[in-house]
Image (cartoon, rainbow, N blue to C red; front, top):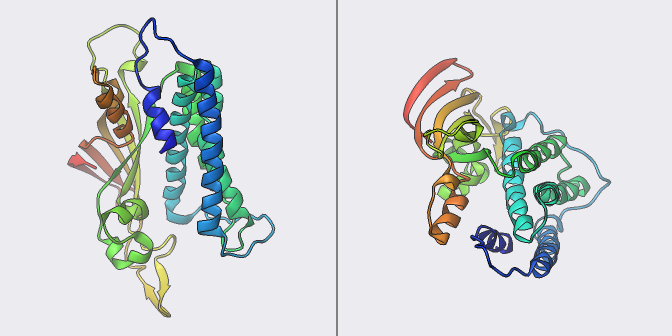
Amino acid sequence: MLILGIWSSANAQITPGDSINWDRRKKVVIIGNSVAYSATMFGLYNLWYKDYPLTRFHFHNDNRDWYQMDKVGHAYSCYYEGVVGIDMMRWAGYSKRTSALIGGAYGFMIQGGVEVFDGFSEAWGASSGDIIANAIGSGLAIGQGLAWDEQRLWLKLSYQPTDFAAIRPELLGSGFVEELFKDYNGQTYWLSANIKSFMKEENSFPPWLNIAVGYGINGFVSSDDNVFERDGQTFDYTHIPQSRQLYLSPDIDLTRIKTNSKALKISLRLLNCLKFPMPGIAYDGRSRKLDFNLIQF
């Protein structure tokens, strides 16, 4: 909530003649984020890790699970935490370079704390794949901040419910909200590129029109082989084919829609993390079939 509050202020228009107390803004960002980070790590440890035994720091190899969809999710989270961090640093008056390097690394620092907890917990273990994905997400935010002082390539998410959650609700969620976060079968992660921002000459091309490439999976009721246990009974769903899926679809960059409303501008920026439903082409890696979808979620 603190991050979103500062982010909203960070996107407010500053008009010539405004008197800005930059030192005060820097203190708000530094102290506010220090308190928020410490409170988050303290709360996370007590709510999630406290009741599990500790051990030496170790790694757990989960890089083959879910066809790496969870790794893409890590990159997505770190990317947006980095985008928020950059906006906050710029709001506080830091330079383009400092904002990109420090603010863009917010996600890596936040998720890095989770990896440390995992590494010392006997029940889990740090994941090299998670760390790499975190670095990719943060790097995407940092790189664009340094190169263009704006985000031209956005990571986005779309979702549609599937039938797989009903098979294993304890893992894939029960109800829309849980399934949105837990059912990887229904998620699609997109890399959405703004076309006009890469054009050199002035032209009439729509500044809000993007082209997006998506990645998803299908057929998973466990993280690996679709065999699992519940209440002492073994369930075998290996007859369900698992596959990777690729997508291509137009998209809309909501941050490039011009408006004089501060509230609408902030809302559009927050909603830009979601892929706008538009026609698309889907490719299934197992069947090697192409399908056209009138509305691609």
